[in-house]
Image (cartoon, one colour):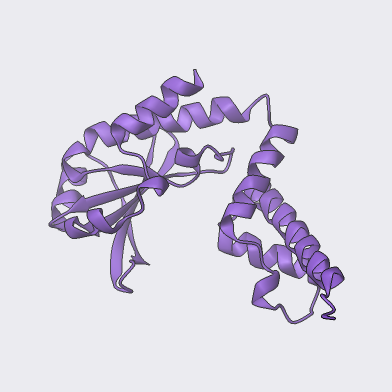
Length: 198
């Protein structure tokens, strides 16, 4: 008869859960990125042990823990914070409508907290057009790079708008059809999210 090793499976699930809870706390309290929070949380839980990849929680598990953290500790402030970020996102998206803006990240999925920024994916034939457009609006921005799905470097333009950090991740127009629709929201969808939360 096969002897299934359930205790080891349970232990892995427990470790994953502990790491996810610690990561959620780091995201909510310090504004850490998911990958950074995951690494730091693993070190807090496991110390200097070698970290096996299968012990790390996935982003969905961490996202759920962030939701639970907000429900427990920020229930009186988080919904208003989320509303403010979405209102500002709508304003920016309306200004940038010609660049096909989509809201992503915490402001889109509802896990935004006090340290969250606004992240938008923009899809355009020419990234320089966006830079010129922002300059014409009198917006000073910083440029950095991020990797796209094909492993190529794409630009991110970051600036402050109404005291909130906004990051525009610029993609080639053709990438629009390759993006998961569940992970982004266009202007109408963001307005709908806002209406549903009122």
